[in-house]
Image 1 (cartoon, one colour):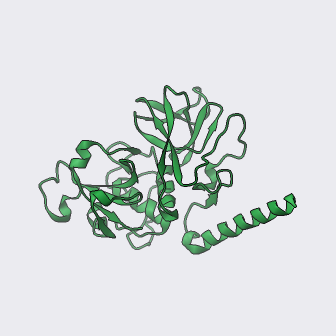
Image 2: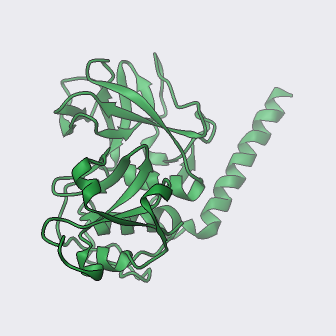
Image 3: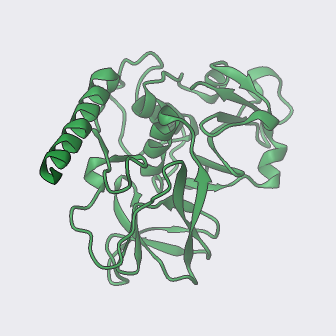
Length: 275
């Protein structure tokens, strides 16, 4: 009976995965896969999930919460392997977050620049943090966004598509400014077509006030150079709201999950709900 149960369970997962691909995901460059280990806790890119997990490995077990690794210090290395001898792919500042996939041999397995990476799990350097999830589409968008963390900010970068789903043949993988990143994440994650700039994206969806922001909403800000402008010309930045005062965005240096500072809040204009 156990064998039959396992076979049936695998069949259900396979049918579910096929249904996902059949519902508009098949034209995406990446393929989503359900992680059985964490009870379909999140949509995780199949090529990010390791096949051999031993020792003190752990996976998220709370299906309604997103588990993240938060840095407790500035300059925390994100490494290509489980050990200080492996190359650094980038660094996290204090308070910055990355995805948590598993705990392996004293290292947190994560995703950084669309590849498997590791952060020291030493309690002096990092810890785990949980926040409430949104619905499936919201989590799919955020999963894509988390895979882009660490990519450098490139002002005026090529968009993945032209706002209508027609792909831009000049798109350069790994190069994003703020609105290019949101456009890519919402399209890849949920098939949502965002326009090509912050000043056109702010016209999409439904307006959301600060008090009513939810995980997955777009947040639009002004900046010092646009502060005194009016209308859409005042908009200078866009980010994805995660909840608990955290955003996922890219601004000036690289794609990051970080807290919204009081300065950034002073520049907040409005939220837009597109999911």
